Image 1 (cartoon, rainbow, N blue to C red):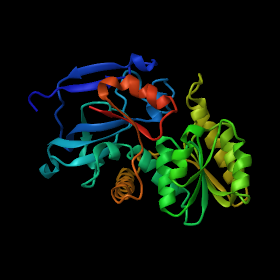
Image 2: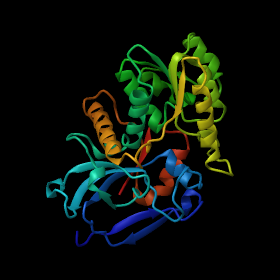
Image 3: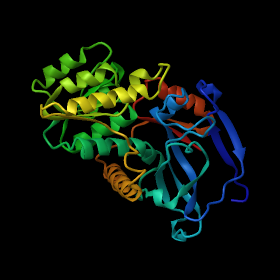
Length: 343
């Protein structure tokens, strides 16, 4: 560790990807209850894409180091932490700070990565895997034989969600650009081109009685269409407002509009339900329960990966020093899965 150097990617303000800055400094020392993790892989998610535009719902003030999640090895343990953790490969949900060579983390927030699971593969499934698993199994509670609609089925969350659904015996309809349709068919998904096809009409052709769940990251009008496509007893899980990515103005209003709609729809006596998924829900007042649930769910996703029930969808792999190129690639819409940064 004596020759180690901390390298971080800093988001200085609302900038184009080329405006990201590289910062170097001394490697930090963990305090009591903390560990120092040598990062092996971190990723580019939709959250960071929104943060650079200043449009993520609760992002911190600029400047800061982005990075929603990471996978790495424990290098140093602080006071009160079991020294046996050193050398263990772990994953963590960070929200910010992951785009770095070394990161300090609370030991209580670590999830061990099973032996035999590659760091880059595991990284594609941290925030995406938790999100997909919890929406599928905790919110929608899908069952074998049901049919669901996944918007953005080629994306980081979408490509994970469709695989977990297929592994659970669920039929999947997925929206994506036509360039991704062969990949989706190989995963057992019925694809719809959201750019050229009438999505609601095509879904009704495939599932005349409606679908049992819809997972919608698009927001705007799409949420209303998704609600109308539900069968009786079906569940709409909204988890983003991608349609407003390039908008200006309030970053909170689009989310609040979706929340208001779900509350209104839930008040209707029609046997359907709707909600907005927030991965951080409950952490502020139920921290222990939040950590336990996160650990259980991410472990289940890693085990599905290790056992071959799902595969990692790596959309690209670039070094941390090329974070700008990684962001451009992630925002291009041309890749399936998640773009990964490797310090």
